[in-house]
Image 1 (cartoon, rainbow, N blue to C red):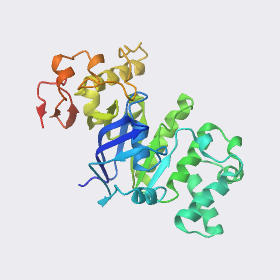
Image 2: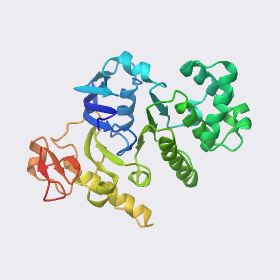
Image 3: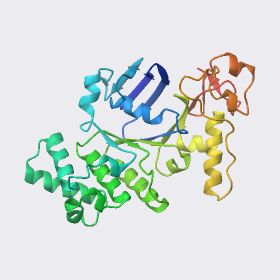
Image 4: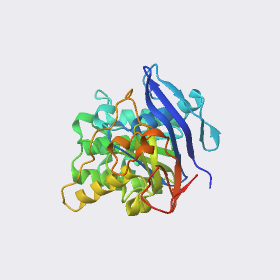
Length: 319
């Protein structure tokens, strides 16, 4: 099966500083890919590069990029896909909705623009979308201003907006930020259910590996502007190849069990920092001299891929 979205060698510089350093990511039809990493890893920048939503003056390049089998490198192709072929769920929903317009106006406007619906048809479809995101009183929410709704309700509205163009892929950028724990769980379940119900694919961006366990089919772990480990969610949780991914799994497991997580020493490099050949080497419990001197090879084991000199298995084979 061919990938729906396939990025190879994505690089981004902002004001001359490298932000992404050769990102490789693919999303298969019908799956949810979790993109995980600490703040500053480049997760949101990757999504925004796909949607051409980077700050002015950003320099973007791809070795290759395709969506639905079509060349996705031209800026126009990515701009035209926004809303239509790719829906976007923002990190802070209340700030993404216009406070001076009612929810119904904003959702209906998106439907009229994306699907060419008339006013009456757009209202009917807007109410249907509000029902689809499990809003029990869609008429009230339709008439409400964003400030009259809770954070969780605003996020449901943003998910409805993302569905308005009947997209093939929905990208959710930290969609549970600022929500309490019970609402976070509801939003994540809703996201997973809607991907299945609407026969689309999803990309869930998060800093918390624990939130992807019940939602995502595969995981891409990012560090310092690169994807360092990919694999099925089950394999990553069972035995992540890359030491960084292994530590993230350990932290998630500790939090789930109510224990005190053991933090990863050091910090994520800042853009412009001098990096060792393996950017994680200064923080890595398995680092040896070659990690500071040579680019790590791409290794393959049990369906996982990782860039690492010393992966956490003896069965890894360099590719």
